[in-house]
Length: 316
Image (cartoon, rainbow, N blue to C red):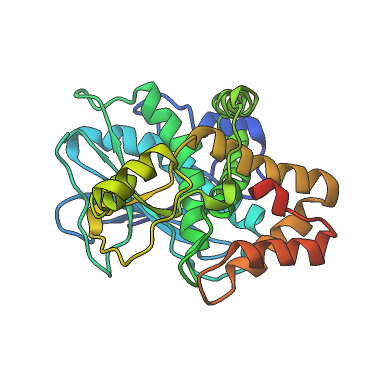
């Protein structure tokens, strides 16, 4: 069964007050968005769902729900579906019939989404026992999921990297969408990011964020007692020899995460201030379209070519 909305809302551009209303409706209300098609669906046999389709582009996603969460799911489906058009506009995404990540509303604290190469990612909204939404749920719907949907867009060509570019781009676009859905919530998160930048004193080394490092103890245990003592006394000492490492010996550089998110986002914001949103998104799209894992050098080189700026010092 298909339902085509006939409410006042429009998909792109959308009036801010209408979008805010769709994202803050009381549980039990079912706001709809003009241009967003709702289809009753049940593809996995366990949960019911709504298939939400942006009629202008064919872009779509599913909102799943169990019996206890159905009212909450239907009250926020229009908010989630409206994000498709907003994201496509901000991303300059001209794809037809693009598949976006799904969302599942559930009262089951133990629910785990199905896994597999052919299964679309599902973001979980764990409703309260009575099927309502708490503040964390509302933040997830309006400020986190837009960010995560940008990651779905980024990976359409090839595995992405580096971390700062992926997260900066997702934050930059995600906040633009979130500000139209829930401005008070988005502004609070943005203020937290700005404060994180102001509070950090050490260098953030954005270019190494997410990079793999060998645990110091993995090297120390393979050294002679003499070299171990020397290494502990002088961390710059590089002992000779061949070392063997297992999976537990390697860690990802995830320190200062909040400040790194903020600083990565700020690179995009500052580029937009100087060169305009269209130029920045064109630069990002060209990088995303490279059919291989992206490197810091490629990002910096194309920024120098497009904007006449050297981003290198910001990554050190």
